[in-house]
Image (cartoon, rainbow, N blue to C red; front, side, top):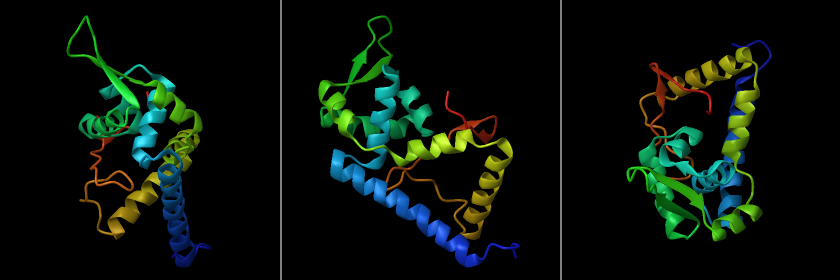
Length: 171
């Protein structure tokens, strides 16, 4: 048993994490009319456009196929546009429409952005403590074989792999 941390404290911290994700998701839906992943995608596009689908996927730590579904819904709402390259017809770039730019100017922050920035700013030792602890928690719950899903959606998020391990860096 851990020295000063009790099981109750761990359970309460897990509850807090769920609460924060739930609250941010509700805020995104209420203020922007978007799901958390849609808002995260539009924020990534706003900060980095023009982007290819693979670029958006890399920035969100998800597979391009998952991003395509998110982009389809954003395009239906008139928030993003896709443009096929004149030089290479296989290349499609994504940018915000004027409506998307207006929405993003008033949209709330996304929890995923806070999480990524926070994890990337940790010293390697602290990051590994969290990574190992999360891995243990997933095993305790018997969830290590479940495909990860984007929060508050039914979209499966197949982890990106790099040399057999999950890539932990944007860029």
